[in-house]
Length: 211
Figure 1 (cartoon, rainbow, N blue to C red):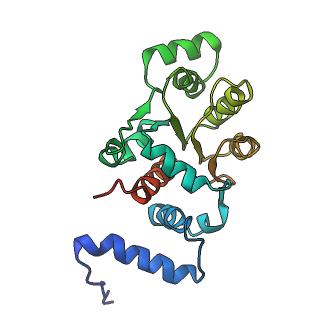
Figure 2 (cartoon, rainbow, N blue to C red; figure 1 turned 90 degrees about the vertical axis):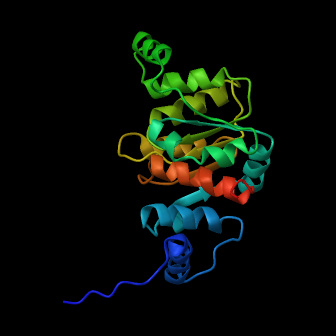
Figure 3 (cartoon, helix red, strand yellow; figure 1 turned 120 degrees about the vertical axis):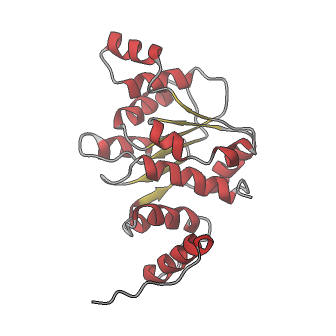
């Protein structure tokens, strides 16, 4: 059996991938949301994100404005942090943080019998900087963010809520959508650290952070 490979130059692979995504979607997406939805599909090869991603009102404009004023991104995993384009983020004066491996976070989680993801959200809440949260793994992080918002201890610029899994994943996402905080949420069980990172990158590129 002879397999025919499409001849594409390395620099053209991403562009061609997005062309294929547009062709296979077979429908137009809202102009402001399309880059995010298509990048999630590009990252996962999962077209369900075209229907499962939920966006609060004017969230893209709000997120871009936050990035341009130097908002930092806090993730719940090192994997999500590593996937964020730091150069693009630094262009606006922002930084990426993940506290999940910090010794004080581990100690706090042990003392309070909570998860490190929960404790890392408490540490982030103490930061005196505008914050975007990108949660791709731990529903407990989303639950703690919801509690901190309700207690008026934190007011995030944006919450990207895309943890993947089965236990409390769906419920934690629904909690975030009940708040007044701008959000991008992948409804249902799907998501992941790679999706959290790619949404951050889509917003950064839309803001002009990519050369």
